[in-house]
Image (cartoon, rainbow, N blue to C red; front, top):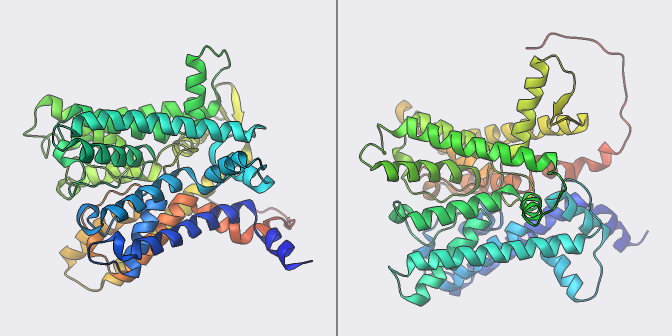
Amino acid sequence: MSLRLQIFSLLTPARTFVTSFAALILFGTMLLMFPSSSARGLSLVDALFTATSAVCVTGLSVLDLSKDLSTVGQIVTLFLFQIGGLGIITFSTIIFALMGRGISFKGREIVQDTFLHTPRRHIFFVVKTILIYTAAFELLGTACLFIAFSSDYPAGRALYLALYHAVSAYVNCGFSLFSDSLMGYQDNWLVNLTVISLLVIGGIGFVVQHEIYSKFQGSRTRWSIHTRLALITTGILIVGGTALFYLCEYRGILHTMSPGRQFLVSLFQSVTPRTCGFNTVDYGLLSNETILLTMILMFIGASPGSTAGGIKTTSAAVLFLMMWNRLRGNDRVNVFNRTIPEDLISRTISIVFAAAFSVCVVASFLLLSHGAGAPSQSRHLFVEYVFETVSAFGTVGLSMGVTPKLKDPQKIAIVLMMFAGRVGPLTLAYTWVRRRLGKRSLVYAEETLLVG
């Protein structure tokens, strides 16, 4: 077998998917290290951290993007999180189509696994639809934010800020050109509702967007189980998160606010932890109950087929349905007169376990690498580091202010966490063990044990 064929056989769809993100991160790192990209020059670790955060649409930053990056550097990050949000394979598919070339089987499989819950024949149509939806929502968001920003900035600057934040919101990145994120627009209904809408629409996934659009167009095809579970779970998390945030903070940061602002702040902080790192409050001032609520929302994340991270809304729904069916005495997981396949249940459990294990390992490393300190300080750092790790895994980008204080080894650990959170820890492991999984496993005599 020739060397080319050997390399081609090693590049499975999963490995191609992971490799494409790694290559884009390295390319972005080199661009950010150019003198024209920053005002003071970036170290290799800081450039790598920023590029990874952009490509993995996380939003964590060791820099103040508005001060430490030049306009060129900011445009580089815009390019990185736009491409990283939709995936290199998506744009490659369109380029091949324009060139009159077909998409490879591996590329087809990657697009299907990334955006679709069932295989589709017309991949070009799917990708074209994804790009049309993306352009439409980002342009609409840019127009709305331009109206809001134009009262504070000249037209050219307002348009630039509107475009940057609209794209960042839709791809669920959370990079902001304001030093305090969106805290300066805490009571601006247009900014808040525009960003919330972009976060939710981008976070529900492209399949759900298309099925909703088809229903408005008069389609009589029923919504898939995926779409129904994604919408129901998203609605529950938004409503429940808003109510719980208000209950946790109505005597805290919400105490001096008007009822309208209380609702707006609670709603924004309910949506952004599941998808994006924008914030309109200082998370270092929140109560412990609110921090716990935020970490739960970040761990769940948004829906599959979107640009967001986390274990995903459908995974949380499947776990709940599994427990509910077990309590009712059902061996199988049933919902909406359908039965969820057993292999999907096993995959969901594996995803949740892999996610929790990854968070524990990285958070432990952050704590151990920090060094000894006073017990009270260690307890405070424990919360901050766990929060930072969950935020990195969920590709959220929220922080309690510890990100700029990380040491270089800690930054590398967060980089790995962001990368694993974007491609999925199970997918990352699958790239190395796929050949073994193809072999038939031995089956021994069964023996029971006590659990629970």
